[in-house]
Image (cartoon, rainbow, N blue to C red):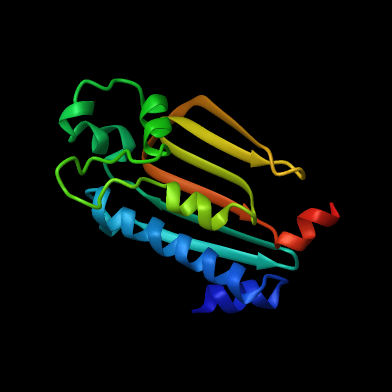
Length: 165
């Protein structure tokens, strides 16, 4: 895949590049499965020395409406809460299917040591996660202007470069 080659050519190990590509693939499959408008989905990446960034987005139903299809979340009103829930372990609209509803947790594990910044946008909220040099993560949910669908933006650095910072 071009993304993996681009990442390795710009300082990421083959393992790190593989995790990036796996994350992109998982976000893409979420568009196909959850957006309700898969035809609007897209993904882009950019690789420069010591940095890899990607965006996955769609103009579909968004996180709030997707979660509302789960009976437990039918009365959910706030897109910020919906994003926070969707980023929590075990939360999904798939309430009746075994081995479903792992949420974004596997993505966080795969990107844990290389992601510097992640932004999730849907409806009128965003959730931003910034990893400091010491590995701690600052997470903030903010109200924003209205956006149809879902957008995820991720900026990564190779593990060894974050230790040098």
